[in-house]
Structure formats: structure tokens, C-alpha cells
Amino acid sequence: TTVPAKSDITIRQLLTHTAGIGYPEIGTKEAKAIFGKAKLIAGLGAAEGRILADDVKTIAKLPLFHQPGEKYLYGWNIDVLGYLVEIFSGMSLDQFFKKRIFEPLGMKDTYFYLPEAKHNKLVNLFIEKDKKLVNSLEENPLLANYPKYKGTYFSGGAGLSSTAMDYAIFLQMMLNGGIYNGKRLLSRNTVRMMTMNQIGDIRGTNGFGLGFGIISEKGSTILPTPAGVFEWGGAFSTTYWADPKENIIGIFYRQLWGSTLGNVADKFKVLVYQAME
Image (tube, rainbow, N blue to C red):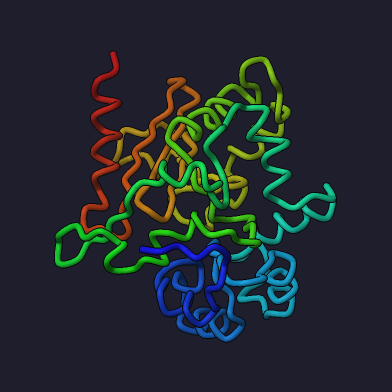
């Protein structure tokens, strides 16, 4: 598949080829209609000239689905925060991440859009079709290759490509209370607030911090995950958790879009805790 030298993908193409990606596909019929009409596509910002600032200004004009604090909604909040970082720092979000997070931590393989020298490190993405794995280059080349585009959109809530090692470094920094290899990125109280439940009981059995799902006593009854674990996952069947009590990190990465075996990561977690003395 030939990758364009620049981002010459149109919004219409992205809407056609990335159906199922992004927050518009998670939620009510009304939400999907509103986001679709506004041409908002979470994370995949390969469309020519698209920038975060424009999307946030569009988001600001949309109606609230509920009052803040009433319900838990998978939405655009972190994208808005990403734009605020750009305003306060005077840098684009990709440069802020690079200067303030990736370089200090030694995360050498994490980008919104991969430099050409690292295109060969991008793994093949697979799609499950009729319970068989199909290379997404055959089914959806735009989806498979978007990290190789020279995009201008740096989402606050999605879109980074990374390696298991790089993300393990980031999680270790969080587990260390904001420090990694002697360098402090976050204060210990910032980490505490990020990894404590911020939403009460509105999400059901588990809580949510600032960017992480938080396991509560009620939510850990099925799996052996202790309360206080913070975790989440990525679009392409990647998942992770960090356990402050046991001082361990678990990372389970698959390069897969859509799967009928969604419980594989849970089984991996069971095996990890089962093996501990």
C-alpha cells in the first residue's frame, strides 16, 4: 500500500474508512448524529489541515448531554484539556509531550505520527473477520497506516503510537509517584489525584480518576484485581494495569481491531496474580 507523502485524506474518507473509531461511535444514537454532523473524529487526525484548536472550538458549540457530575460519558474532555495545554505552554501538544514527557523519560518510540526512519517499526494491524484474522492493509489501509501520515492533528485523548517498553516506562513513573530514574515529572499529590476515584458511584462498580479507570472494592469481585489498581486500554486491543499495592505493572498488547476474544486480557491478569507468591 502506498502511503501519501502528505495528509491528503478528506474528512469524508476518514468517516467512511474508520467507522467505529472514536467517541461518536460510543454512545447514544443522538450523540453519534450530533458528532457526525459536526465532522468530529476522535484521535485519527490525518485529514488535511485539521488541527486540535479547530475541533475544540467546534466542541464548545455543541450541547451538553447532561450537567457535569450527573453521569459518566465517554467524551471529548481530554481533547479539550489537550488544547488548554497548548494555550498555556505555547507549544503544540506533540512538542509539549516530547519535551516534557517523552524525552525526560527516555520514551524514544512514542509519536502521534511516526518519523519516516521508524516506519519499519509499525506492526501489522489485524482485523477479525468471521472469527479469522485478516491483515488490515487488505481491509482498511487508512486505518493500518494512519501513524505514517504527516498529520497536523494532535489529540488530547487519543492517537499516539508507542511500544510496550515505552508505555511500561510511563506506567513505572506513575507507580513511582511521579519519578522515573531520578527525574520527577509529576508531584506525588498529582499522581494521587490522577489515580483516585473522582466520580463517586456514577460509573457503577468502578470509579475513574484523571485518565485512568480505578478498581474499587465492588469492582474487583470477579477478577483478582485489588482495589486501587488503575488501568485502561487502547483502540487496537491493548490493555494495561498498574497495582500500587503489589508494585507491579501488567501490559497486554495485541495489534488487533475488533475481537470476539475480549476476555483474553482478563485471563492474562488472572495468570499473573495466580503466579505470585
